Length: 308
Image (cartoon, rainbow, N blue to C red):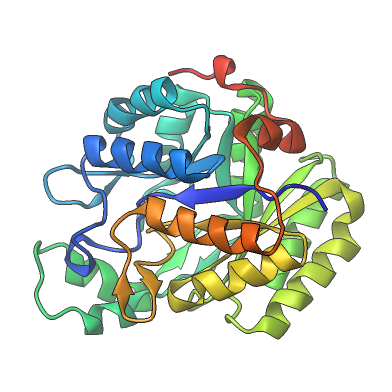
Protein backbone atom coordinates (compact mmCIF):
# COMPACT_ATOMS: atom_id res chain seq x y z
CA UNK A 1 0.00 0.00 0.00
CA UNK A 2 1.11 3.55 -0.74
CA UNK A 3 1.97 5.84 2.11
CA UNK A 4 -0.92 7.89 3.49
CA UNK A 5 -1.11 11.65 3.04
CA UNK A 6 -2.48 13.49 6.06
CA UNK A 7 -4.07 16.83 5.22
CA UNK A 8 -4.99 19.32 7.92
CA UNK A 9 -7.71 21.95 7.43
CA UNK A 10 -6.64 24.53 9.97
CA UNK A 11 -9.54 26.97 10.46
CA UNK A 12 -12.06 26.92 7.58
CA UNK A 13 -15.15 29.10 7.28
CA UNK A 14 -17.78 26.93 8.98
CA UNK A 15 -17.04 27.08 12.69
CA UNK A 16 -17.26 30.41 14.49
CA UNK A 17 -15.25 31.75 17.45
CA UNK A 18 -18.08 31.07 19.91
CA UNK A 19 -17.96 27.35 19.14
CA UNK A 20 -14.40 26.81 20.34
CA UNK A 21 -11.81 28.89 22.14
CA UNK A 22 -9.15 26.87 20.31
CA UNK A 23 -10.17 27.84 16.77
CA UNK A 24 -7.28 29.85 15.24
CA UNK A 25 -8.39 33.34 14.24
CA UNK A 26 -5.45 35.72 13.85
CA UNK A 27 -2.71 35.28 11.25
CA UNK A 28 -0.29 34.42 14.05
CA UNK A 29 -2.61 31.76 15.44
CA UNK A 30 -3.23 30.27 12.00
CA UNK A 31 0.51 30.14 11.29
CA UNK A 32 1.35 28.62 14.67
CA UNK A 33 -1.32 25.94 14.42
CA UNK A 34 -0.46 25.14 10.81
CA UNK A 35 3.23 24.73 11.62
CA UNK A 36 2.44 22.54 14.64
CA UNK A 37 0.14 20.39 12.49
CA UNK A 38 2.93 19.91 9.97
CA UNK A 39 5.34 18.95 12.74
CA UNK A 40 2.77 16.41 13.94
CA UNK A 41 2.67 14.76 10.51
CA UNK A 42 0.44 16.73 8.15
CA UNK A 43 1.93 16.83 4.64
CA UNK A 44 -0.74 19.24 3.32
CA UNK A 45 -2.11 22.34 5.06
CA UNK A 46 -5.53 23.50 3.83
CA UNK A 47 -5.89 27.19 4.66
CA UNK A 48 -8.58 29.87 4.97
CA UNK A 49 -8.17 33.37 6.41
CA UNK A 50 -10.18 35.18 9.05
CA UNK A 51 -10.67 38.77 10.06
CA UNK A 52 -8.41 39.07 13.11
CA UNK A 53 -10.84 41.50 14.76
CA UNK A 54 -13.92 39.28 14.93
CA UNK A 55 -13.00 35.91 13.43
CA UNK A 56 -15.25 36.20 10.40
CA UNK A 57 -14.02 34.55 7.18
CA UNK A 58 -12.22 36.93 4.83
CA UNK A 59 -10.92 36.62 1.26
CA UNK A 60 -8.47 39.51 1.75
CA UNK A 61 -5.10 38.59 0.18
CA UNK A 62 -3.35 40.91 2.63
CA UNK A 63 -4.51 38.75 5.53
CA UNK A 64 -3.37 35.55 3.78
CA UNK A 65 0.02 37.12 3.20
CA UNK A 66 0.45 37.67 6.92
CA UNK A 67 0.65 33.91 7.51
CA UNK A 68 1.57 32.20 4.23
CA UNK A 69 5.26 33.28 4.20
CA UNK A 70 5.61 32.37 7.89
CA UNK A 71 4.33 28.86 7.22
CA UNK A 72 6.56 28.44 4.18
CA UNK A 73 9.63 29.55 6.11
CA UNK A 74 8.91 27.17 8.98
CA UNK A 75 7.80 23.94 7.29
CA UNK A 76 8.09 22.00 4.05
CA UNK A 77 4.38 21.11 4.07
CA UNK A 78 2.31 21.69 0.92
CA UNK A 79 0.23 24.85 1.22
CA UNK A 80 -3.31 24.37 -0.08
CA UNK A 81 -5.42 27.55 -0.27
CA UNK A 82 -9.21 27.49 -0.39
CA UNK A 83 -11.13 28.63 -3.47
CA UNK A 84 -14.38 28.02 -1.55
CA UNK A 85 -13.69 30.96 0.74
CA UNK A 86 -16.66 31.68 2.97
CA UNK A 87 -20.41 32.02 2.68
CA UNK A 88 -21.54 34.76 0.31
CA UNK A 89 -18.17 35.48 -1.32
CA UNK A 90 -18.08 35.98 -5.09
CA UNK A 91 -15.85 33.85 -7.29
CA UNK A 92 -13.48 36.78 -7.84
CA UNK A 93 -13.22 37.31 -4.08
CA UNK A 94 -12.57 33.62 -3.52
CA UNK A 95 -9.79 33.64 -6.14
CA UNK A 96 -8.07 36.86 -5.05
CA UNK A 97 -5.63 35.29 -2.58
CA UNK A 98 -4.87 32.14 -4.63
CA UNK A 99 -4.12 34.22 -7.74
CA UNK A 100 -1.67 36.31 -5.75
CA UNK A 101 -0.09 33.40 -3.87
CA UNK A 102 0.11 30.94 -6.81
CA UNK A 103 0.20 27.94 -4.43
CA UNK A 104 1.05 24.37 -5.25
CA UNK A 105 -2.51 23.33 -4.49
CA UNK A 106 -6.00 24.80 -4.03
CA UNK A 107 -9.30 23.26 -3.05
CA UNK A 108 -12.02 23.17 -5.71
CA UNK A 109 -15.63 22.26 -4.92
CA UNK A 110 -17.04 20.12 -7.73
CA UNK A 111 -20.51 21.62 -7.88
CA UNK A 112 -23.10 23.97 -6.47
CA UNK A 113 -24.93 22.69 -3.40
CA UNK A 114 -27.23 23.51 -0.52
CA UNK A 115 -24.74 24.04 2.30
CA UNK A 116 -26.67 24.11 5.57
CA UNK A 117 -24.75 24.65 8.80
CA UNK A 118 -27.66 26.28 10.65
CA UNK A 119 -28.21 23.39 13.10
CA UNK A 120 -24.86 24.15 14.74
CA UNK A 121 -26.21 27.53 15.89
CA UNK A 122 -28.66 25.83 18.24
CA UNK A 123 -25.77 24.37 20.25
CA UNK A 124 -24.22 27.76 21.08
CA UNK A 125 -25.45 29.44 24.25
CA UNK A 126 -23.35 32.63 24.25
CA UNK A 127 -22.15 34.51 21.16
CA UNK A 128 -18.90 36.44 21.09
CA UNK A 129 -19.69 38.43 17.93
CA UNK A 130 -22.88 39.73 16.34
CA UNK A 131 -22.14 38.24 12.90
CA UNK A 132 -21.95 34.62 14.00
CA UNK A 133 -25.58 33.61 14.65
CA UNK A 134 -27.07 35.08 11.45
CA UNK A 135 -24.12 33.75 9.42
CA UNK A 136 -25.02 30.24 10.50
CA UNK A 137 -28.82 30.51 10.55
CA UNK A 138 -29.05 32.10 7.10
CA UNK A 139 -27.62 28.95 5.52
CA UNK A 140 -31.13 27.41 5.49
CA UNK A 141 -31.58 29.63 2.42
CA UNK A 142 -28.05 29.44 1.00
CA UNK A 143 -26.63 27.79 -2.08
CA UNK A 144 -22.87 27.52 -2.48
CA UNK A 145 -22.30 28.29 -6.14
CA UNK A 146 -19.78 26.49 -8.28
CA UNK A 147 -21.20 26.03 -11.75
CA UNK A 148 -19.44 24.16 -14.55
CA UNK A 149 -18.35 27.54 -15.90
CA UNK A 150 -17.03 28.56 -12.47
CA UNK A 151 -15.04 25.34 -12.19
CA UNK A 152 -13.52 25.80 -15.63
CA UNK A 153 -12.60 29.41 -14.76
CA UNK A 154 -10.77 28.29 -11.63
CA UNK A 155 -8.87 25.60 -13.53
CA UNK A 156 -7.97 28.04 -16.31
CA UNK A 157 -6.98 30.99 -14.11
CA UNK A 158 -5.12 29.02 -11.44
CA UNK A 159 -4.23 25.64 -12.86
CA UNK A 160 -3.30 26.39 -16.43
CA UNK A 161 -1.87 29.84 -15.73
CA UNK A 162 0.06 29.19 -12.51
CA UNK A 163 0.54 25.41 -12.39
CA UNK A 164 -1.62 25.02 -9.29
CA UNK A 165 -3.17 21.58 -8.83
CA UNK A 166 -6.37 20.86 -6.94
CA UNK A 167 -7.96 19.08 -4.03
CA UNK A 168 -11.25 18.25 -5.78
CA UNK A 169 -13.85 18.40 -3.03
CA UNK A 170 -16.75 16.02 -3.70
CA UNK A 171 -19.66 16.34 -1.28
CA UNK A 172 -21.90 13.88 -3.11
CA UNK A 173 -21.88 11.24 -5.81
CA UNK A 174 -22.90 13.75 -8.49
CA UNK A 175 -19.73 15.72 -7.81
CA UNK A 176 -17.69 12.68 -8.82
CA UNK A 177 -19.52 12.61 -12.13
CA UNK A 178 -18.94 16.35 -12.58
CA UNK A 179 -15.23 15.72 -12.14
CA UNK A 180 -15.34 12.78 -14.55
CA UNK A 181 -16.97 15.08 -17.11
CA UNK A 182 -14.11 17.56 -16.69
CA UNK A 183 -11.56 14.76 -17.02
CA UNK A 184 -13.21 13.36 -20.16
CA UNK A 185 -13.18 16.83 -21.77
CA UNK A 186 -9.54 17.44 -20.88
CA UNK A 187 -10.30 20.37 -18.59
CA UNK A 188 -8.43 18.59 -15.77
CA UNK A 189 -5.80 15.86 -15.89
CA UNK A 190 -4.56 13.18 -13.55
CA UNK A 191 -3.43 12.39 -11.03
CA UNK A 192 -6.61 13.82 -9.48
CA UNK A 193 -6.59 14.38 -5.72
CA UNK A 194 -10.21 13.51 -4.89
CA UNK A 195 -11.42 14.54 -1.44
CA UNK A 196 -14.68 12.73 -0.66
CA UNK A 197 -16.62 14.56 2.06
CA UNK A 198 -19.21 13.11 4.42
CA UNK A 199 -21.63 14.56 6.96
CA UNK A 200 -22.33 18.09 5.67
CA UNK A 201 -26.08 18.79 5.56
CA UNK A 202 -26.79 19.15 1.84
CA UNK A 203 -24.22 16.53 0.88
CA UNK A 204 -23.91 12.78 1.29
CA UNK A 205 -24.45 11.42 4.80
CA UNK A 206 -21.77 10.03 7.08
CA UNK A 207 -22.60 6.33 6.78
CA UNK A 208 -19.94 3.67 6.14
CA UNK A 209 -21.90 2.28 3.18
CA UNK A 210 -21.74 5.74 1.58
CA UNK A 211 -17.97 5.83 1.98
CA UNK A 212 -17.71 2.49 0.22
CA UNK A 213 -20.06 3.60 -2.55
CA UNK A 214 -18.15 6.85 -3.15
CA UNK A 215 -14.89 4.89 -3.37
CA UNK A 216 -16.38 2.29 -5.72
CA UNK A 217 -17.77 5.06 -7.93
CA UNK A 218 -14.46 6.93 -7.99
CA UNK A 219 -12.60 3.69 -8.80
CA UNK A 220 -14.94 3.10 -11.73
CA UNK A 221 -14.79 6.67 -13.04
CA UNK A 222 -11.09 7.45 -12.55
CA UNK A 223 -9.25 4.13 -12.38
CA UNK A 224 -5.55 4.71 -11.77
CA UNK A 225 -5.84 8.44 -12.53
CA UNK A 226 -6.76 9.50 -9.01
CA UNK A 227 -5.56 9.64 -5.42
CA UNK A 228 -8.38 9.14 -2.91
CA UNK A 229 -8.83 11.02 0.35
CA UNK A 230 -11.59 11.23 2.97
CA UNK A 231 -12.84 13.80 5.45
CA UNK A 232 -15.92 13.64 7.64
CA UNK A 233 -17.60 16.34 9.70
CA UNK A 234 -17.81 16.48 13.47
CA UNK A 235 -17.89 13.26 15.45
CA UNK A 236 -17.47 11.22 12.27
CA UNK A 237 -13.96 12.58 11.62
CA UNK A 238 -11.83 9.90 13.29
CA UNK A 239 -13.97 6.83 12.44
CA UNK A 240 -14.18 7.76 8.77
CA UNK A 241 -10.54 8.68 8.34
CA UNK A 242 -9.54 5.46 10.09
CA UNK A 243 -11.77 3.48 7.72
CA UNK A 244 -10.26 5.32 4.75
CA UNK A 245 -6.74 4.50 5.86
CA UNK A 246 -7.62 0.81 6.21
CA UNK A 247 -8.94 0.90 2.63
CA UNK A 248 -5.76 2.48 1.28
CA UNK A 249 -7.04 6.05 1.22
CA UNK A 250 -5.59 9.33 2.41
CA UNK A 251 -7.11 11.39 5.21
CA UNK A 252 -7.98 14.94 6.22
CA UNK A 253 -8.48 16.21 9.75
CA UNK A 254 -8.45 19.68 11.30
CA UNK A 255 -10.58 22.19 13.17
CA UNK A 256 -12.33 23.21 9.94
CA UNK A 257 -13.92 19.77 9.82
CA UNK A 258 -14.37 18.94 13.51
CA UNK A 259 -13.86 20.70 16.84
CA UNK A 260 -13.51 17.41 18.70
CA UNK A 261 -10.73 15.01 19.57
CA UNK A 262 -13.07 12.34 20.91
CA UNK A 263 -16.50 11.98 22.47
CA UNK A 264 -17.04 15.00 24.70
CA UNK A 265 -13.40 16.07 24.38
CA UNK A 266 -12.69 19.34 22.59
CA UNK A 267 -9.61 19.42 20.36
CA UNK A 268 -7.22 22.03 21.74
CA UNK A 269 -5.32 22.30 18.46
CA UNK A 270 -5.09 21.01 14.93
CA UNK A 271 -1.88 19.22 15.88
CA UNK A 272 -3.80 17.11 18.41
CA UNK A 273 -6.06 15.78 15.67
CA UNK A 274 -3.15 15.14 13.30
CA UNK A 275 -1.20 13.33 16.03
CA UNK A 276 -4.23 11.16 16.87
CA UNK A 277 -4.96 10.00 13.33
CA UNK A 278 -1.24 9.47 12.73
CA UNK A 279 -1.02 7.26 15.82
CA UNK A 280 -4.09 5.27 14.77
CA UNK A 281 -2.78 4.70 11.26
CA UNK A 282 0.73 3.78 12.39
CA UNK A 283 -0.70 1.31 14.90
CA UNK A 284 -2.40 -0.29 11.90
CA UNK A 285 1.08 -0.65 10.33
CA UNK A 286 0.39 2.09 7.80
CA UNK A 287 3.09 4.58 6.79
CA UNK A 288 2.64 8.34 6.68
CA UNK A 289 3.77 10.32 3.63
CA UNK A 290 6.22 13.17 3.96
CA UNK A 291 5.56 16.45 2.12
CA UNK A 292 8.11 15.42 -0.52
CA UNK A 293 6.33 12.11 -1.04
CA UNK A 294 2.96 13.87 -1.24
CA UNK A 295 4.34 16.19 -3.91
CA UNK A 296 5.48 13.22 -5.94
CA UNK A 297 2.16 11.37 -5.56
CA UNK A 298 0.16 14.44 -6.63
CA UNK A 299 2.57 15.79 -9.29
CA UNK A 300 2.89 19.18 -7.60
CA UNK A 301 5.13 21.93 -8.91
CA UNK A 302 7.19 22.38 -5.72
CA UNK A 303 7.31 24.88 -2.90
CA UNK A 304 9.88 27.06 -4.66
CA UNK A 305 7.41 27.86 -7.47
CA UNK A 306 4.82 29.72 -5.40
CA UNK A 307 4.22 33.46 -5.08
CA UNK A 308 4.87 33.93 -1.37
